[in-house]
Each structure stands twice: as structure tokens, then as C-alpha cells.
Length: 133
Image (tube, rainbow, N blue to C red; front, side, top):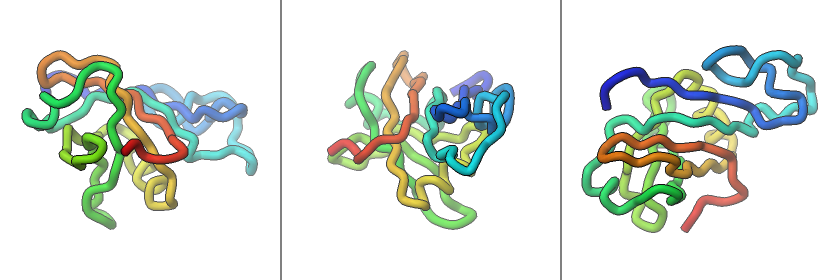
């Protein structure tokens, strides 16, 4: 996918995030307190390295599974079709290390397809109680 890879990260806590400003983690402003859940993430991001066969199976509004591929320093975040685990694309946005750490801690995330135009796919990633099946 060409062009810029921008995403909008926020922490959807009552403290307003406060993990940064601009286009990084958090929405800025408030100090992070001990009661702030830094893994309550919600952000929009374009999928990278979109896979043709998998993207043909999804449409706007569909929910994808957000999962780790690999481990440790080589871990990456992919979005897969529920049930098949076929990779639709990967997330490579600023602040991805935070998302990886939260997934490693047991948090579950989903990606809702907000806009799909050929191989250009914008998703909204958010924490979920469980992964879609």
C-alpha cells in the first residue's frame, strides 16, 4: 500500500490516555495514574502487506482477529479472518510495541474493517472480551 502509514492511537480510559501526544500512543493531556489501564487501546490504522486471497473474503464492517505472529523481538501483529486464521494484513503503525506487549500479557484485540477499497484497508483496533470465532 503506498503513501503514508498514519494511525490514530488512543487509550480509552477515563483519564484520557495521556501516554503521548499527536500520532503516538494516547491522546495526551492527562497524567497516567495507577488506576489507568494502559492496554485499553483503540486506534485506526491501515493494514500493510494485504493478502489478495484473504482480502477477497472480507468486507466493510467485518471483524478480524488481531494476533501475534512470531515471538520476542521478531513478533509482528497480523489481522486474520476468524475461523480460518488466514492473514489479511499486518499492523506496522507507530506504537506497535505497546500493542504487542499488551497481547503478550493476555489482552485480546479485534480489528473492525472501516474502509476497504481494493487492497487499501483501514481498520479500527480495539480491545475485546474474546476473539471472534
